Image: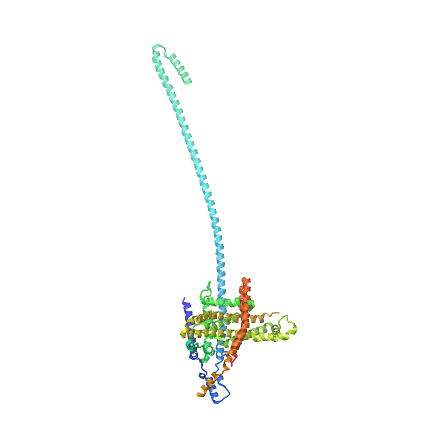
Length: 227
Length: 255
Length: 87
């Protein structure tokens, strides 16, 4: 924005200076249509006319032709054009070419770096995808392992529990059998002694004790066998 | 009665095209030529500062770039092809110089196309004439150049007596003359039309009764001012492309 | 000075003076007829060409301006000639 303002100010300033330089000429011409009498040539012409020279009044009234080239304008114009031509030749066109080349280079660089970045991103993406796939496999493997471990643990536990239960049952059965045997033995002893006691008491009254004991024992065996 | 209705004071032509001379012969026309050169240089200096701008931004940069691009693509490539790229600086300077010294026709308070004076069109046409002749002589050799420019291909021998003078006049005299007159006369005619309609508008405004038709005259003045922008551009373009065409005819003769 | 003004008055009253202006008008008017027709032909045919082949409009337009420039030159010669005529 500032640069634009500077450029505008520069153009306006140059125009103003040029206007000032050209002002005297401009002002002299714009006052009135140039009456033939007001120009130097016309005055001379009229003096000649007054003296009776070979000119007519029409010659003196003639305005300068708009077709005739003016030497001063050609000189100034040619000088301006030459300066401009050299400036454009040496600086202007090369500067524009440089600018276009710089832009071209920059666009090409940008495109190339974008291409490179894209390729890099693609590669990284592929890498990430591979990593993710690997991680998935790993996770699956881990889960499978864990499941297998849990399965083993469970089977182990079940087996151990069954074993224990079996042990307990076996022990209990053994205990029961033991107890039963003991109770049987005790009972037999007790029954025997009780029976002997009872029979003794009975036999004391009638028979000798040995025959009776034999009778009772055989009876008890009979009972046990049938039991 | 006449004076009451209309008092149009159209100035004589010499009063709207011929300016007196200040110090060192510096007058309005010279000032416009200096302005044209300075304005072109300003465009190139300010327009090419930001070298690596990706997007051409700003009026001046656009003007500098599209001006050179226009001369290269629309003028040189269309006529000369890649051989002509070495003339890019001359044609660019020519285009901008003619355009800027003509466009002053519609700039307020200046309102004079410097090319409505005979001087510079003459000089520029002569420079172009010298360039295409020198190029022709340098590329083809003097005799071949004369033969190629004077004898069109496929013309029966007896007619050559008639054709050769015509071709000579058309190649070596009419070309620069028409180049010069085309630019000069277009600018002078446009300037005179603007002056006429401006004077007519002023006259109609001053007279009491006729003020009602003044808008027509003024509207035409505005329209012609717009048209003169197109003419200034078109004349710069035509002068430049004809220069390119003439140089091309010297570089690549048609056998 | 009195003599000069008398001479000027006589010159202004010269009836042949307006003939120059008439001559200029005839010259320019005559010179404008041919190029007027010519430019009409050029532009008309260019428009036909552009309408038939819109894709080549750019080339046709450039060529059209060149043709206009060549044709117009004749009218401009007349325009300049009108200034050269002096009575």
